[in-house]
Amino acid sequence: MVGPNSSSPLPRAVSPVWLVLIGIASVQLGASVAKSIFDEIGPTTMVWLRLASSVLVLALVVRPRLRGRTRRDWAVVVAFGLSLGLMNWSIYQSFARIPLGVAVTIEFIGPLTLAVLGSRRARDLVWVVLAGVGVALLGFDGDDLTWAGVGFALLAGAAWAAYILLSAETGRHWEGVDGLVLASAVAALVLLPFAVGTGGGDLLDPRVLLIGAAVGLLSSVIPYSCELVALRSLRPAVFGILMSLEPAAAALAGIIVLGELLGAVQYVAVACVVLASIGATRSQRARVPVLD
Image (cartoon, rainbow, N blue to C red; front, side, top):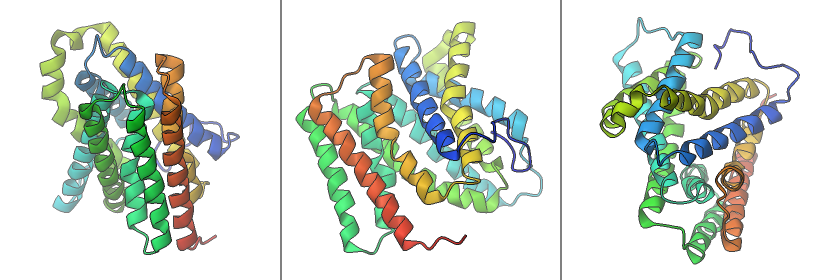
């Protein structure tokens, strides 16, 4: 992550589309690496290590300005941090119980619903129906599903929707990415006692700390940096469409890294949610005029 006035370490020759795709791949690779060692490091401890390591890296680069802030500024960033922490904690809990691709597909219902709720056109409900069909299809081939796993994924989706709303509000109160760095710190502080309680002495193991740092780099630092640079030249609507590939990327990472082969019906379900998200994003682009 880099400050708004700093030079990016990423090559300018790299297309912003490729930067977003690199960020998506990095997030899902980090998630699959984290899940692969849940038997050694519990999901709560792992998500804390991810947040803490990313905060350390980002704070060194960004160095947010803290003086002269109002109570409203701090209230917004704390709420943003709570949504960030809940989103990460609940999706990792879901990863521990159901396949990666399925968890991210269900989680995506949150931001998709938020996008459609902003529409006043009845025909946009088709995207809700398509996403609902996708989620329903998951249940037809759901031998590897659990109620707890699905519930945590839905909770993560709700937290993701709150994260999107609070991210916009944070951007109005904090410059650059200062708010994101501080929100990540809030999330890490809230999860700290739970991570210590479940991780215990593992948090003193250099190997565990190294793995946590790697997950933080893959799941936070690299994607945040890629997205920040990409959004300087990429239209928000195009960015939204690219982000719609997250469920498919998660399913692919689950196959390659974890050997999580989904059933044929589940792949169709993932495709339904991806198409619904792309449709909702394109619909938003049609409603909002773009000023060149």
